[in-house]
Image 1 (cartoon, rainbow, N blue to C red):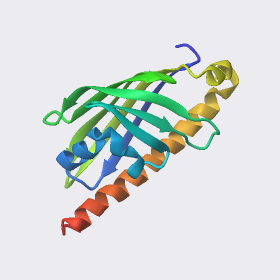
Image 2: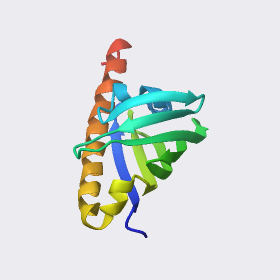
Image 3: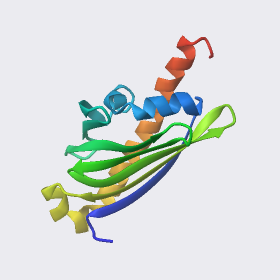
Length: 155
C-alpha cells in the first residue's frame, strides 16, 4: 500500500434503532451538527455533499462524498470520496439489543499536496489524528441520538 493510502475501520455502538441511526448517517449535510470535526457540509446534489474536516492537526481536508449505496433494509451506506481524499467510505448498521452496532470502513488516498509530501514521517500522526476524530464522532453521534430519544419521550 502506498504511504499516502490508508485503510481505517471503527466499530461503534449507539443506543438508537438501526432505522433512526441509518437516517442520521445518511444525511451528509447534517454531520456538523453531531460531529465537531466535520466543520462544514454543503449539499451539492441530492446524494452528495462537500465536507470540510479538521481534527487536532492544523489542516483541513475538503472532499465531496457521493452516496453510491443507500440500502436501509440492509443497513448499508457507501459513498465515493473525491477531493483531498479519494476513495470510499461505508457504514454498516446492525441491530444490537435495543441499539445498533456500526461498522465504519474507509479506504482512501490522500491527495492534499502537503500531506503527500509528509507521508513518510507524518503517517503515524495522521493515523492518530484520524483515531481521535473517530472517537469524537462516536461521542457526538451518541449525544445527538440521545436527544432524539429524549424528544420522543423514550429516555
